[in-house]
Length: 124
Image (cartoon, rainbow, N blue to C red; front, side):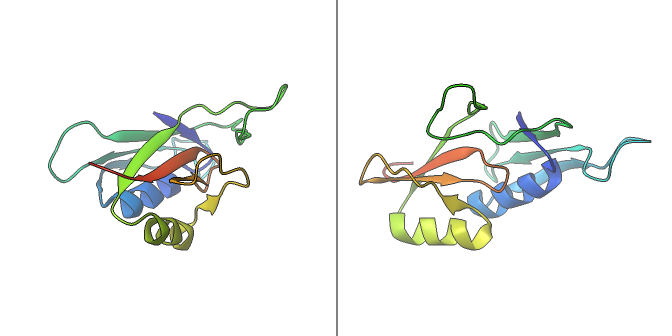
């Protein structure tokens, strides 16, 4: 479960990035803001998916870690065939490359809510 200021938008981002399907998308509860709700993604072949929930006091994580700053809550590693193409596609979908890139063969990216994730060439 990833906390987010807009969980359905973040689910849509990861759905496009991973090629997964949104299987559940619930809107706001009565009296809550329009961003409230939650969503779930599943891979096409089945198996474990990702869920996203509204966090009213969401604070973007800082990466790399800094003292007295919001720590990352999750870190996803995503295997890709072509690192440069995958990073460019992630940016087109709304991600941003992290300023600090500690390894040449990995791209640290920040999703639209600020959660870091890594792209790497490797086996799936």
